[in-house]
Image (cartoon, rainbow, N blue to C red; front, side, top):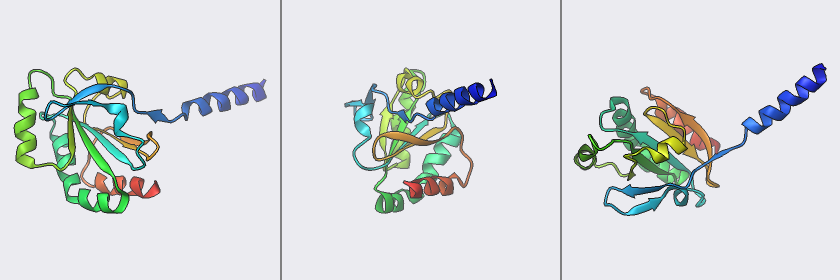
Length: 159
């Protein structure tokens, strides 16, 4: 009986280790162009997807701090960062002025109905995913603390 339970536990665990992939959701970028999220990954380079909002201080701090490292990460790993705003209809008008003021070098997508967030099981922000060159989510972080850039660098180095 113990062997059967152990075998079931191993089979169940193996199923849990299946890599998460990026769902197919239509979003708009900051200029109003429609983007299919599944088309953003699997192009032979890693992608960081960071869910954020204008009302979320840790989100803005994370993305502002990543700006300092982004050019080096692009040179070393070829990574692209996509910042997905989850601002809803009440705060969506704050996104453009904010991103214009900080001049982030990232692709900005808008997810006002949180369709992409729900598909990625994002319950709160900041929530950051690292996707490998084949399009598999290999790491995620559901928070931000100063210094998380070093963790991101380590994760990028593993790819």
